[in-house]
Length: 116
Length: 114
Image 1 (spheres, rainbow over the protein chains, first blue to last red):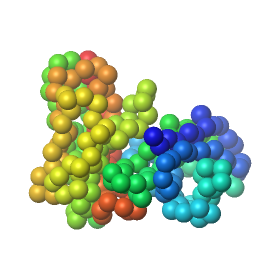
Image 2 (cartoon, rainbow over the protein chains, first blue to last red):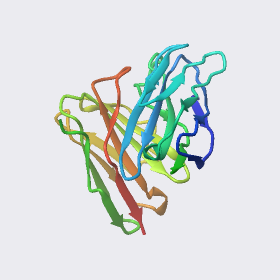
Image 3 (tube, chains in turn purple, red):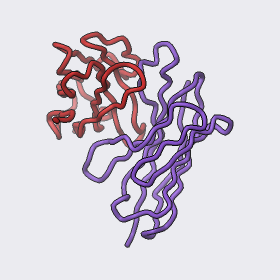
Image 4 (cartoon, helix red, strand yellow):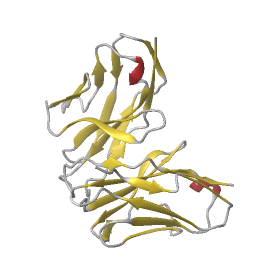
């Protein structure tokens, strides 16, 4: 079945450092890819998405590019802030596959801690 | 506007008791999903509703778990004869429909089975 693998955390960074969180996937169909973020004490929020190969999703300074050839969707931010401290989840949904119903398949999550 | 709400926010129950968890989706959202977030299993899909019907129950871990949705709105997830391994955060999400629509998540219900 479909699956998502992302790098384990916690990832600890200083403010203004460059952040990369690796995410790779396996899917039988042609999935859409997502990054969700969970800030401390808050619910899951969609951070960005990409629905086809070579699409780049971006939001709040974060970017991720859908790479079909490497089955990857790595999350990057050039200069992190303390407020970016959160747990980040990579996810896929295979809308084109019968019976997928749009449900999300999540990676294990990566905790990011940004220190001043 | 109002987001997805869930109640209770926390629930502590004794092993063997039944519990009901409630989800109020965003008004007008026809699709509703339940997920479970636990330390050992991460985030797992449980069940999907389109309107009041549940075409995908494939994620329900056992027959002790059931869910219903009424009026195309509120959904209730029921766990019978709770076990310690049911301890988790239960998340509800809603979206405009099946397809490439953003799923909006509620804050979750933290269930602890003692």
